[in-house]
Length: 78
Image 1: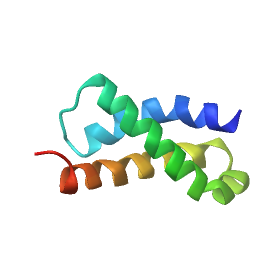
Image 2 (image 1 turned 180 degrees about the horizontal axis):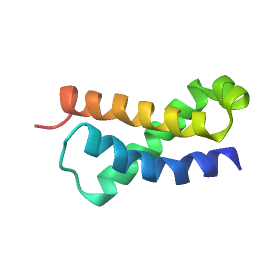
Image 3 (image 1 turned 135 degrees about the vertical axis):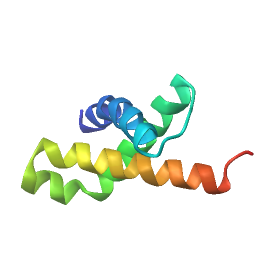
Image 4 (image 1 turned 90 degrees about the vertical axis):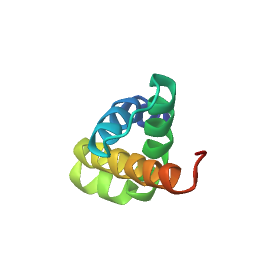
């Protein structure tokens, strides 16, 4: 159930992260980045989630998506 929640939050996080990084990506790429970032950020920041509640999950999801966008821009297809 937690993984499903991270994927749902990830779709929103991908949208926020692509806007924060000012990149143009298709909708599926944006959602994919957000979902993967949500899984990465959510799992890494799981302890923070238990301490601060669901808001920490959104923060972790956005941070994870930002990391993936940075890696995608740095090492992705050109």
